[in-house]
Length: 114
Length: 112
Image 1 (tube, each protein chain N blue to C red):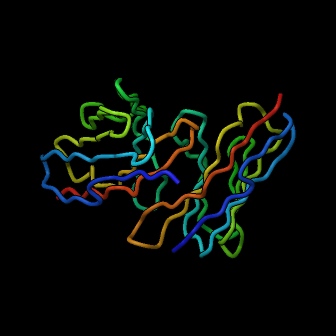
Image 2: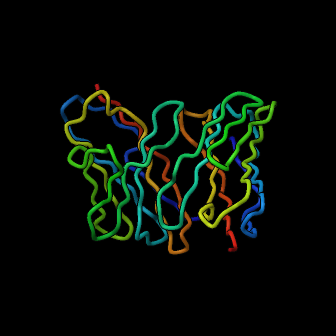
């Protein structure tokens, strides 16, 4: 099946710094990528939908200026957590949608903000 | 490693009919999530089950986790075209802390 990678797999940063997470579709072109957030023992929460070449669509309650999304190519989307704070610590997962509308998930990035 | 198997892979039903989707785990489930994806959109969380025998409902959709906590079923009563989409089960993985693993999904088509 199609492979989606995320980098880094885990990151620890100081409060106030920015962190960039990359999501890549390795063997297919993804016109749409999704970013999710998951807290321990809770469901995935959709943060935003990212379409190549256009601005991301954010879900209600998700701060656009806090979570910057860039979908520069058909195989790469990035999520930047700006001025991270401890409450931003979470597990961030991306998924990429193929031309057949199948959704493939990345392995996730665990962010810890000290 | 823990795996989730969903059945059927796809389903075509006549509007108004009931249907059931199953999600079977190779290991005990400690948290089971059901999601729905409309074509071209992100996942929508439907419900979460944790306790053996637990059953939850959301509008005309009911999900249950069996007593042994290794299988969950999702039942839709009187299906409507709005129910069409991909239904995905997810479970808390036991490896590396919290991390959701997913079934392959069930594609539901509802004929009007």
